[in-house]
Amino acid sequence: MRIYTIGFTKKSAKKFFEILKANDIAQIVDVRLNNTSQLAGFAKRDDLKYFLNELCGIDYHHFTFLAPTKDIRDRYNKEGDWDRYIDEYTRLLEKRKVLDILDRSFFETDTCLLCSESSADHCHRRLLAEYLKKYWKGVEVVHL
Image (cartoon, rainbow, N blue to C red; front, side):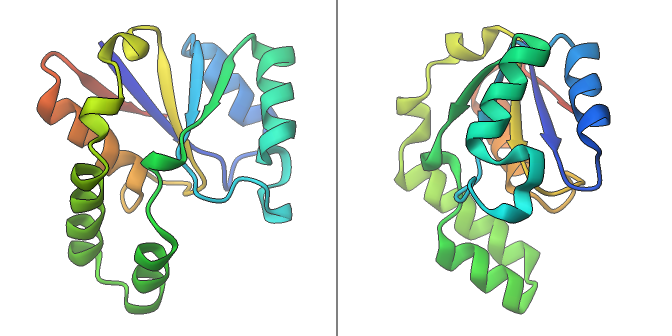
């Protein structure tokens, strides 16, 4: 099973949707805490849901329980301590019992975790994908 990840910043809408189509993504799981900001452009919740369906036939889901808290995010933005962010976000996933909430079978269709960061290097979508890979055998993570 593959779990894909993608960020929308530094991508045009054309490039973003072409990448999703080229990889046969069936559903997007939006893991952002705030997905209605004007700064999100084409990736604002309602617009994105519409575009995904109309342009690509992709289902849209927004799971806020997979997003970091505002406190965790703000602390990282202020301090820039990536190791602390990893630790706090991982503990949050455990506290929220995401492995009990998520059904592995939901991810058996080509699913892509969405966040805003252009690169997965310092983004919670990568941490989440790696967390699932650690506990779900046979998972490959692909960053688009």
